[in-house]
Image 1: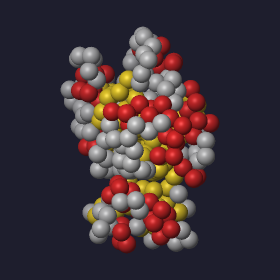
Image 2: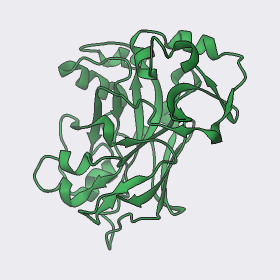
Image 3: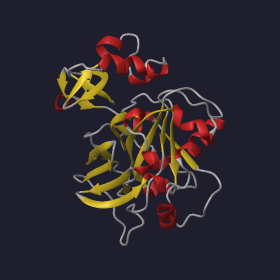
Image 4: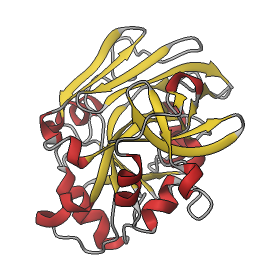
Length: 282
């Protein structure tokens, strides 16, 4: 199933995409579980699936404004330098462990919502990435069991303000501007996508392919990421892991390329969907 969070007539809700519409689950579950994350945290994901099964959509998908899939994520972990081509183009050395940074929930925007280029910089770069959304609680999760902790997959544009990212050795200033991270369009549950490693990630800017790689090209694979992160931080349903971007980012090109107002950035992952965000000046 494809779970979405969305806004309709000023009210936030969540549901399941069926054909070109949405089965609203907020009406039934929203009073007790106001967000998809809250329902997942209460162990209700299977109940949501059962409630949506066989139901006809009540509203056209085109009529709602999609929110980030998990708009109230408590933890968003991002893995840097996780494809060899990207590590090479940055000139960074190999590491024994994943490079991690965090994003705040208010930096994310939904599918078809604008990514805001801050007035303080003209170096807004694209980074297409697969998202893993955690489905059950765990600590010190062994890698051989890690995949069973995943609820589903989504897409992230870890749009980066490159000059601010390089102010110091810490990346957080370049990664946490409001409304810079596209997150969506939905969460595809794992039962719909048996082998995520066979899928292809493609980033396009104004229709031109900038990045392309298969998920199995990661340096630290998904089980390793979950095992490593859960060693130091308990993972809970609705927590988000943004798994890294392939080579082909803008700053590493000759000459460097950056996104500007009016540009359209699309990130497609086969089996998951396509995330689209137009760039807008803040």
